[in-house]
Image 1 (cartoon, rainbow, N blue to C red):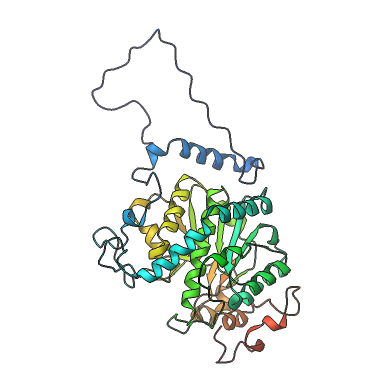
Image 2 (cartoon, one colour):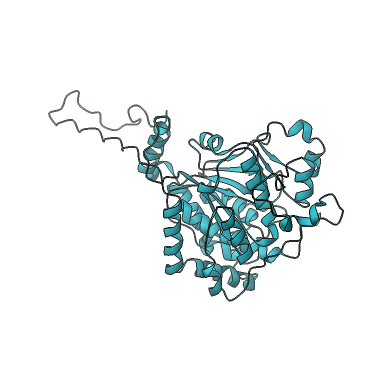
Length: 405
């Protein structure tokens, strides 16, 4: 392979024998423990040794990769000469740094960062993560408001129905008191809401469902929520856990985490497919498996640094950074569609053919509850311990034309 064998070129040759002592080979690093402190299983040692070697030799292998997270000014997401320019890009500001545009939204996103990153809130959040997830290798992270709490509960019920334990490895970030109460009532760890009192504005707790163009009147709240998600996701990665970043409009038919762990060997980031050929593809930011290593720590801190210029779509920001020329060495894979299925109208029409191999199903786009129910993937009902009839949308008539959520 590259680098093997004697050097090429006209350098002086070494004598056949030398009186100098032969230097001892550098010892291989000991396999580290997992994020929670437990020893690695024998089957994981090859992957861990590979990662340790990568960390040790990154200056030789990660050519051009940033040595530290990029700032907004360094990333230059609006520079048309440096970044791929795709249809639908929100990064169309004439200022190459994007700073000159949408200043009001920048102030709002910066306030979220400032509040969540103040020392008191960081210490409290990290202490909660350490206590709740000690010994865990991966953490599933979701952020939710009351408007979409029924979708979160449907995911909970899907896991309970299939016997998948998730409560001891899921970190929930509620953005209103009612959502926090429901999350805690169902046995999940929830980030306390104290930090929200410091914002000076309210995060929208409503959700009416998007129309066919993808618009709904609660877009600003959605934008706030996915910004908060990235900040807390950064905490998890920096602390050494593998992250499963997860929208609430998802159903598990089988536990995907073992599959994802195997598929992520010698990769950094796995993402569900977004079958789009514009600025919002090809990674679906609603389901991302991100390992913790030197590259991903720099990557996700850069993602957080860029939040002020994000506008509404976190997915567009994820894809812009994955495509960014400085991050080309992020080991990225799109997850296979048969196992990680998207529930669009066109897949719903032939669900009996395409749904049988699915491990995870994502109710993307509009009319989520309608399509989940039509595909017989609605588990939030009387058979589930988490059921609460007052939280069922549309009074349970998901097929009514007026039911958009």
